[in-house]
Length: 483
Image 1 (cartoon, rainbow, N blue to C red):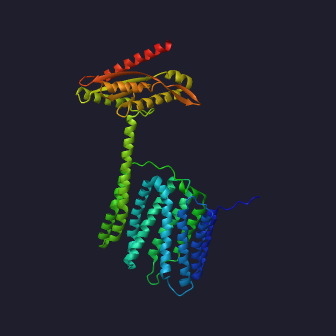
Image 2 (cartoon, rainbow, N blue to C red):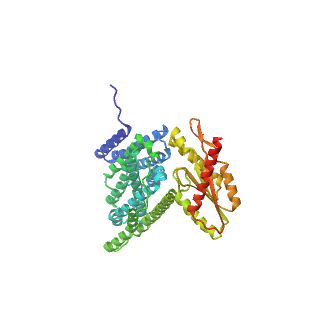
Image 3 (tube, rainbow, N blue to C red):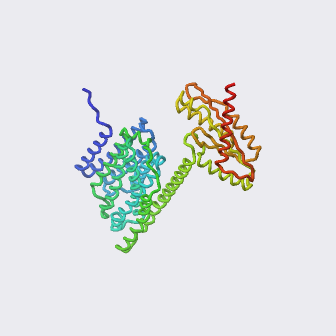
């Protein structure tokens, strides 16, 4: 019997669980070794998959691999100085630089992982980021800032912690948003979300349990980092990681009262928190008020601008659809009559020399529909409509006003009438292919009427005259065909 292999992502997760167990039962330098393995193992997994070209988009995973490698270097320095040496904390530029670089590289990788989704539906991601930034502000005021004040942490350390919390929170919100709507990539996204959320939890826990006496934090926080690193490795080997470049359909993007209310809450939260701080403690955390506001306000403004632009585009599209014939794309009867009425008023006032109205009726549609189906009849109407529209010129209005009826309205004198009639007649004798090499006739009967400058006429009368002339033309064509 063939043995079933354990899925790679579960194997990585079990490896992380094993490291957690070893971390719990170990101490001293052995515990430091476990932490080094915790970042080195997923780094090796990601690098192996990069070497085998397993990723559709390799750049984000390269940053994640570099971040894990940098944290492994930091762990080795910690092992050398603290686990095997006599230091209480790791010191020196390599220790500080590798830690900061590791976190930054991991965050850059996470941000790059979001880029295909941001191009597809950046607006919703911005909303998620804004919401989680607001939650991060509450977290900062309730837990982090008081702890840093008690520890007398210097300003740069407070700023670094604040920026880390805001950035990680924003990324977590975006990952959660994508995981909700994208089923194909959901498992890998949830692994990454777990890693980012644990990074936030670890940052908070480290700040809350930090001891200024020896520069250490609670030992159990190491478990948080181990699971976070393992989650990154599991995300890299899960089959759904290949779907990180195939986002789902974007949800509806409309400017609504609910969205405006949420934006208002996000914008007003920091001033409210500042007021609460002033009332309870007599001071205001200007760092939070400044940094968080600078992060949230531009995002909200960009999002509202995007929503407003989408709203305008939707309204323009609706207006376009309301004025167009669905089949041919020509203007519809309502727009044509309104335009003709306006032109006739200008003709009567002497503002224009005259107006020509052409009335066309597409020939033989019943026969085409009976022999080849209504799709073929629609193809004939569209073909005639396109030819008439091109022949009429850009200064004329061409509209479909009935099932097989086309109207042309052109401003100009008698010479414009003669030229227009000649040009349109020149394109009416033709055919159209309806598939499999089958061609059918695509012709139309044409009638015209003309109103000169200073004359009074209404749209119904002018169209009726052109309609009568069209029937006369149809009758003449029938007489010629019988001869």
